[in-house]
Amino acid sequence: MVQNGSFENGANPGLFQTLDAVSTVITGWTVSQGSIDYIGALWQASNGSRSLDLSGGNAGRIQQTFNTTVGGTYRVTFDLAGNTFTSPTIKDMRVSAGGSSADFSFNTTGKSSSNMGWLSKSWDFTANSTTTTLEFISLTNSFAGPALDNVSVIALSSPPPTPIPEPSSVLGLLSLGVLGISSALKRQS
Ligand SMILES: [Ca+2]
Image (cartoon, rainbow, N blue to C red):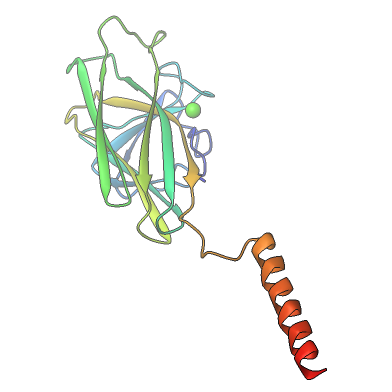
């Protein structure tokens, strides 16, 4: 449901490129607040060859909007690590969609640019609109923030459909109708 969730498509960032709000350099995504770093060769991605540092020069935010079903439940999965070049050691971030959010953190102790220690995270939300904006927000106001890659969204369930009669009960109704007609015919005769 998410376009370019691995951030592989967009102008080549080289080592890395800092993108300020409101950048749309990364296909499908908008840097909507602060700044982020679009990471190329600077460190090991979890998927493909590009990823993000959600803190560019300061705490940044990226977002993407997609179609959803009101009342449907969705699972966001993503890979989380952190920029190991400088403090803080613990990188904090927030994921938000459908009017709710969850916070995640990553401890960079013992990690490096060639051993990022990417962890898979997931979070579920219920859509409250026919379009939903998914946001990843850095809570680390530094130039070394949480690292993000490999975002995907899947639908877990749709809201209950309008009840329709089961085939068996349709047959039941039909047979009742037949009985009604035949008894009416009997009464006539
Ligand atoms: Ca990637």
